[in-house]
Length: 57
Image (cartoon, rainbow, N blue to C red):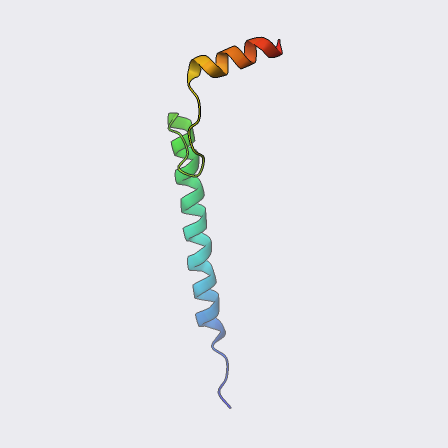
C-alpha cells in the first residue's frame, strides 16, 4: 500500500490559501477604487437611489 504524500497535500492547501487571499485583496482594491463588483448586478440609477433615501428620512 502506498503512503500518502502529506507534503504535496500541504503545498496544494497553501497554494489555494494564497489564491483566495489574493482574490480577496483584489476585491478590496476594486471596492476602494469605487468600481462596482462583478458579483452584484447594477440596478437603478443614482437618482432613483437618492429618491429612495430621501423617502426613508
